Length: 269
Image (cartoon, rainbow, N blue to C red; front, side, top):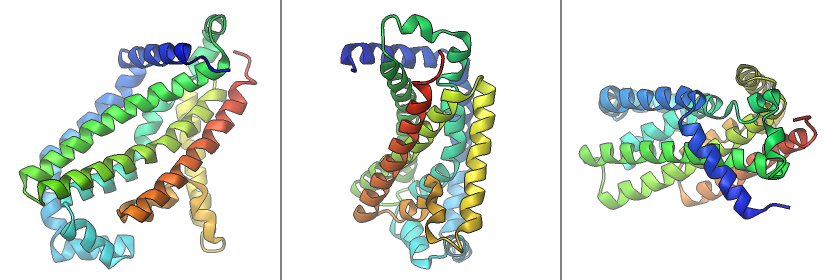
């Protein structure tokens, strides 16, 4: 039985502690440094090139959809479209850094034994997941606003259109990150160290991606073995696709989360 007060206190403690820990700095510094370089040096040149004939042909070839390229870089804000494309592509890497050590180090040290005197395993497991999700939520909020400001500065669309597309992009990128946080919760629940969790999570994800691409020609749904199979839906931003993507991503999140909880509640902590 969850005690909401204890869950709130554990979540706030884990979130505040994570802001001062090296494991969060290993995510925050590369994350914001990367986006600073993108917004400060790359995005203006990228927008100009992607709106050119050569750029549109390249995106059409990559996505196998000429209309999608036109919608992203002609009909919509190009800066926000680039932000969406890059974010979705690199989300697995950033989440591996942000969420790789949710439980593994504390399980090895036996730190959870002290917490179990005052809280349940369910509260500990859920609070760690929520704390990491909050950290990722704040980071994505900042970069989404940053991308929207870039679009406004370069007058790529009207204020209303940029605000709406920026909000849609933020929602998609954040919800897309949730399955990977839950995936790393699952990996961290049985890994014995932070490095082991990071390495194991990377290896499992790479294997799943390779398997999904290997069998996609024979099995139509093999591409959906990992959340990355939803990229085409995420890139084609419209109301129907957003609802489908959110529903599918939440289903991935629930599956990984429950698998991780099944492992965690049976671990000797």
